[in-house]
Length: 305
Image 1 (cartoon, rainbow, N blue to C red):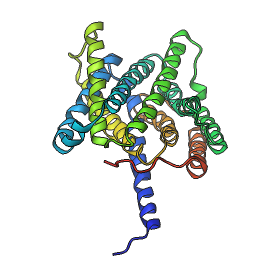
Image 2: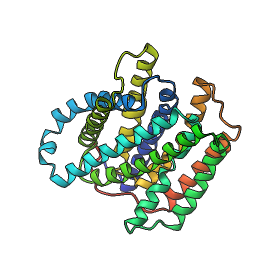
Image 3: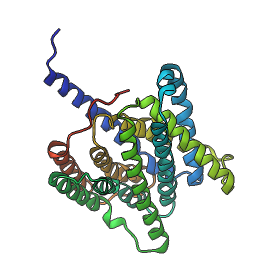
């Protein structure tokens, strides 16, 4: 049966939008889950990465053995670098959740979209006017949702700075991942990236004396929940979408985590979001739509699985 290119494109766009929605829901659960866990930031980083690697690595070994053997040194180096950046992102952001509100930490870490544009400019790829306007509109939505939650207390300020650093590390992780995904499948990339993150965070835990076990049932439930929701259904989905979306669009999509996390925190942690959450959601969506419709086209000819 004949299928037009336009029809195929529309179908793929709808599938990608559905996957993005799943990813956003997944990462939105991470803040409330990790904020309520009694484990340290590095321990959570280790367990979520190690458990995800345990799920993905067997599939990579069974189905991607040839690809694993053919990886060149540059690709391996970039993948390891992405894993190290992911470790730094988790360590700083999860630490921020212990010091400031979920809404503030999530809003600041989602500034990774701005860092992606900044880093791209430093690499000689200036953003179009539509991208800049879209960023401003989306960030206005972020401020409407959670700007009133920012605090000037020393503890909250330290948490805000850690969340900001987490956003910068996340931007680096997204850009490097986008480069690797041009030639490497999602399964191979995530197995190696998460494995690197697990090994690095384990080393930090052992050297720093962070407790890796002995938690209560609610903490283990939170760790498993963040692994399934944020790691497997969140990060892995967005790593997949890096093959068909630019790092800027992926990072802007993650801004929707702000109202999502604020709403979930209100339900599970009694941190009620501001009344303007829905206004902020509309602004974020409008900015994202502007970037998608008028911004730079997504990368092409990348492996999708």
